[in-house]
View (cartoon, rainbow, N blue to C red):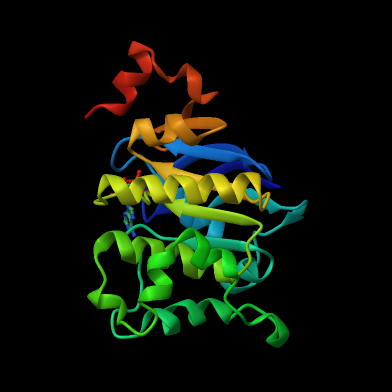
Length: 231
Ligand SMILES: Nc1ncnc2c1ncn2[C@@H]1O[C@H](COP(=O)(O)OP(=O)(O)OP(=O)(O)O)[C@@H](O)[C@H]1O
């Protein structure tokens, strides 16, 4: 479904991605792990169209995306839940969800019922301002908003960061549901190894702008891998 091939990205003279290749398939959870600053966010932002690669390709459902803007990528079915959530603090929960309507045709502009089934708290808080929600509730709102776009590929950048354990469980359950019932391709960036191990079908580990390990989630418990993930 998503194929990244030999992606190189520069910020001025600094090379953030040094030839990264990965794929994410429908009905699978693909996890990218790595320490701070190894290039995970740069990779995700390149996939969703917020950064332009220096070289290399991103293809989605067999079509090259390299020339398409973030808006067009959203229309083709790629939704992004950014690190730090980026919800609108002064808009209500309902209005935040409706910002997800932008890439949809008029007839499709409704919040899918599974958003409220996965995150019932959003239904209870529809009239509250986004900024009044707890961090965990804001994360659920950010995922809900991404689902409003009816994605085929959902890209999540560190959804567990700063979130309490009970909400991490709800988010994990939601991600599994999206894989198993909705058949979505989920691409997940994490630093939290256990969350990734419980969920992922395929794991990539990054270090200094490169993929240094690819494998199944069950293979992560080796000293070499622990070393790659500890500061
Ligand atoms: N806009 C930018 N301009 C210049 N350098 C940047 C920019 N964004 C990131 N970098 C640098 O690129 C490298 C990769 O950063 P990136 O945010 O992709 O890593 P990360 O693995 O997602 O880290 P984190 O877990 O902290 O988000 C880092 O050295 C970072 O300082």
